[in-house]
Amino acid sequence: MQLKITSNSAVFTKNLGKNFSKIISNGDIILFSGELGGGKTTFISGLAEGLGIRENVSSPSFTILNVYNTHRKNKLVHADFYRLENIEDIAEIGIEDYLYDNRAIVCMEWGDKIRKYIDRDCLEVEISYLLADGGNDNLDNLDRRLVTFKSFSQHWDNKLTKFMARFKYDEYFRD
Ligand SMILES: Nc1ncnc2c1ncn2[C@@H]1O[C@H](COP(=O)(O)OP(=O)(O)O)[C@@H](O)[C@H]1O
Ligand SMILES: [Mg+2]
Image (cartoon, rainbow, N blue to C red):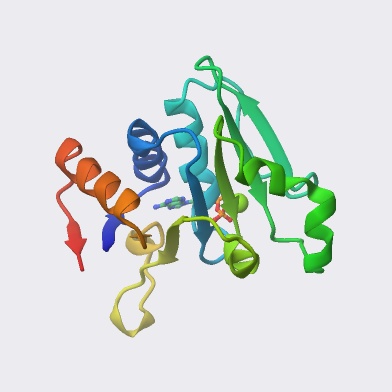
């Protein structure tokens, strides 16, 4: 199942992440893809806020992995594989343990780079630029993004369905 939502601003995307945090649970793994500057970190910072994390979430590009504790005794693991060149390096990053940690919620930017090495069910979130037809990118639509949630399991189908019922966005596309 796929769910698509149009975002018109960074604030909207952050809020989307915050709302999305309400339906995720421990052990969930979310992979983010899409061009640089699309809004992956923005979405995750909203998600973190929704989980009650007070720290500012920014891109962990240099550290690759940041871990934030929440007040619910679980943690948000935020990884960014933008700079990952050798897949062998993944062992050193220490992400693997978190993929089997049922007290962790794992969000991975550029997660498509390591998708085939993960044997766990993941939700995929792709954020892409939405420019006007013909590439006429006037100022009005520079901030438009298409957020696509891709589920491959009953687990995530249920969650996306719950999300739609709970948060009434104007523009939902389902396929
Ligand atoms: N609709 C939108 N959603 C998310 N970010 C947006 C949007 N419109 C403009 N922006 C801007 O685009 C940038 C997104 O940055 P970031 O979240 O770090 O992207 P990524 O992590 O995908 O590289 C921010 O500067 C943000 O203010
Ligand atoms: Mg980022």
